[in-house]
Image 1 (cartoon, rainbow, N blue to C red):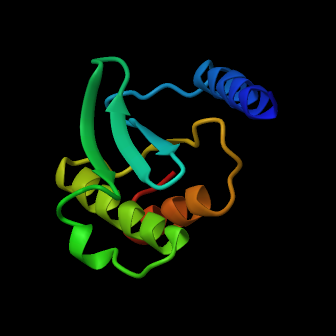
Image 2 (cartoon, rainbow, N blue to C red):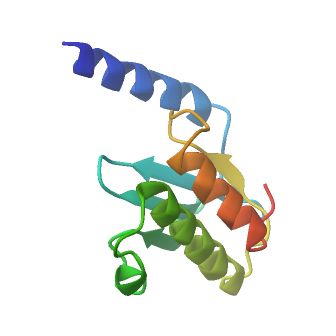
Length: 121
């Protein structure tokens, strides 16, 4: 029961954030989803309805580097990769969407790594 309540509360928080955070062509949305074992990030233009860049811990480009690392370190690698891919698409500034999660741990590590790699939030 408690697990379902936590999930419902996160979805409610995410809906509240999504009511305010919109991805535009000049400033797309960097959306983070964290599952139990993996982290996924997308850069989305909500006006056009297109995903401009993606990265995750199941990405073939990162697979070799992830062995033996903690989840937070893996998230930082995903943040670096999403920033690199977004910058190659010409995106320099994004609106951060933490997906209803706390800005803490894996979500924070991904965001800080993306900032260090050149993305501006």
